[in-house]
Length: 121
Image (cartoon, rainbow, N blue to C red; front, side):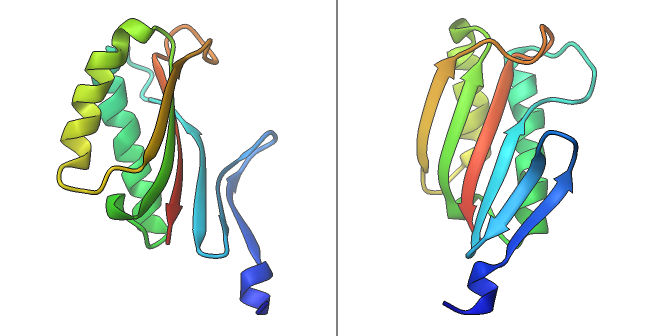
């Protein structure tokens, strides 16, 4: 194994997590949310969060076509259709990654969605 294959790069690290970890040509993004501070509905929170995914993908030399797996948590499963509408618009013609979506308690009441991504670089 080459030394570059052993390197683990942690980006935007805080006290609890790194926002992104890059290892062996794979990008792992921590759960991303709408951090605008605005009271957006699930559709808009999904759009904002996916735009943040795009920024990380671009930063590390990846894109939507290189998504491997996406995990989505919804505070309310009734937001499933609104999230899917934003998701389909965002993916466009890109191949569909493996994906899971569940209802879960999120970090605070204003969060309707959290998205975690694994992508090839």
